[in-house]
Image (cartoon, rainbow, N blue to C red; front, side, top):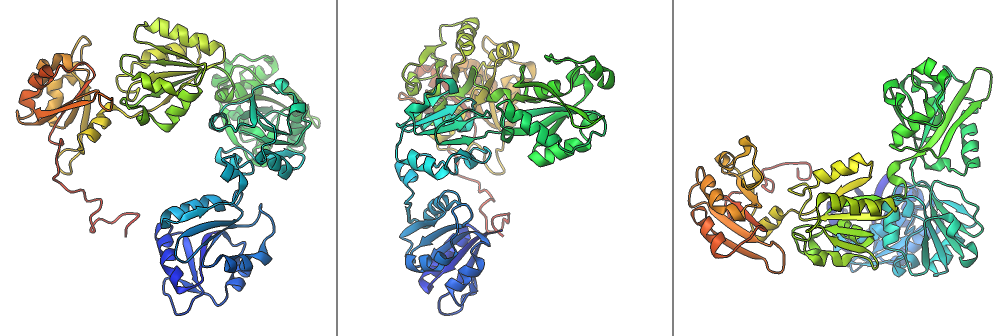
Amino acid sequence: MKKIAIIIASYQGLKPALRIHQALPETELFYAGEGKENSCTSIDSIPAFVAANFTSYEALVFIGALGICVRAIAPCTQSKYTDPAVVCIDSTSKNAISVLSGHVGGANELTHRLAAILGAFPVITTQSDNNGFWALDTIHNRFDWGDIEPVGSMNEAIYRFVNRRPTALLLDIQDDGTRYLERTVPPHVDIYYSFQDIDQKRYEVLLIVSPFIYPVLIPTLYYRPFVLTLGFGCRENCDPSGVREYIVARLIEAGISPASLIRLATIDIKKDEPVVDVITESFIIAIDSYSPDELRDITVPNPSEKVREVTSTPSVAEAAALKSTQNTRLLLEKQKGKLSEGNDFTFAVAMDRTAERRGFIEIVGAGPGDPELISVKGKHFLEQADLILYAGSLVPVELTYYAKPGATVRSSADMTLEEQFALMKEFYDRGLFIVRLHTGDPCIYGAIQEQMAFFDEYGMDYHITPGISSFLAAAAALQSQFTIPEKVQTIILTRGEGRTPMPEKEKLHLLARSQSTMCIFLSASIVDQVQSELMQHYPPTTPVAACYHLTWKDERIYRGELQDLAKIVKENNLTLTTMIVVGDAIDNRQGLSKLYSHQFKHLFRN
């Protein structure tokens, strides 16, 4: 299907149309006004064009009066699930109006985008948008969940939800989508993590994000996250006939939705079996295959000596499902199927380990200090955490003010590594969410390696959210670009040799040979040594900056020359939380990038 058709009703509408086309080259322009316009395809009649092309485009954008737009599309509309998005923009670019298929067709999103291009006011009339509620009919697309499965009338469920009727939300898995729902839950919605806890008589709507099937009694919308793996094994040349249908029936019988399958896992000698092709193609899922060596040592509830004789591993279906999901338990243990003589097959189901609601640790980069310089994702994690363990000597306490009521907030400044781990494991074992908050970006002198070693040893799930490093804050504060065309193209992040020895090949005086922009961490206390080593290769007049508490409320920055660096640090009583920057890039305003030269051609400028 073609992308976007822009239909221009008059000469005055050409200017905004061309501006949109410049920003969105995939658009096609159709002009119904007087006179020839070379950049557009001329059309004689807007209604006739719309009638002939209504379903040929993902979106129709009218530039002209709303009445023209409405009369043109009225005879063509069928359903919000099939109609294209329709947006109308007045010829003076004051308003962009979402007219048709706001959620499902994407007209609301397109309206906001076009309004931003033109500096227009976006007019959205959808009730859920104006109330700030979730768009229940499209939210599954945002988080790559499967199609909505309504129980009862979908429109009735949405109507009740947007009219603030009591709603229960069940989240028995976790992913980016469920975290978003938890973070943005409307006042009339109660969140549950177990179906057994829901008294359905108290609610008029039930929203469920789950791979499981439950006995619901009220209008319900199921959202199926792709979190399940089907482990599969079979006899050689197993007949595919009826196998898919058999598996679907057994899954539903077990209360598991086939719509949440994302992959099939098997042993490599079975991946090309015809039945495997039929299953993966019919479910539209990927395939993971493993060698016998990869499956042999996986502990399963139902090992088989007969399977070992054939494949040299005691399990295929169960072991492959566990291997693929990195899990240690199955949702559905091995099931045996036999639809005809000699056509035996087995299957099992496991859930991706990361989707299970269990304890989890998020290592978050706090940024350089300013609480507003943490990433949006990092802030969201702080708002959700049950425990925030922060590096109190380096991270401003204001960052912990994002914590939700009832969260535990502890500084790790006076704790040993073992004490920190014991505290995190206590919360983890209770199935709670922990944020380990480190200054800047945790990959740079963040001391997370030894913590991750603990997590790995105990099989604990964790993830890292990057942060803005203090060297980036230094560049911003110094209003300097740390790379200069044709002069400096390398930034070195390092530290002086204090109590922690430096590798011999990374001694400061050796790194100084390149005369790159150098950002030196954790070295204010040994500034004499730092200056001495740098001056072996940098000229004495090389610009330097000593940046204390970058982006904190008491930030101080001192500029000078390398030959005076030690004096600058000592006279101003600068401490360990000082970033030292050295190099000609500081305050440089010479050297032009070819990126914006009219002679430089690239993908976006021919």
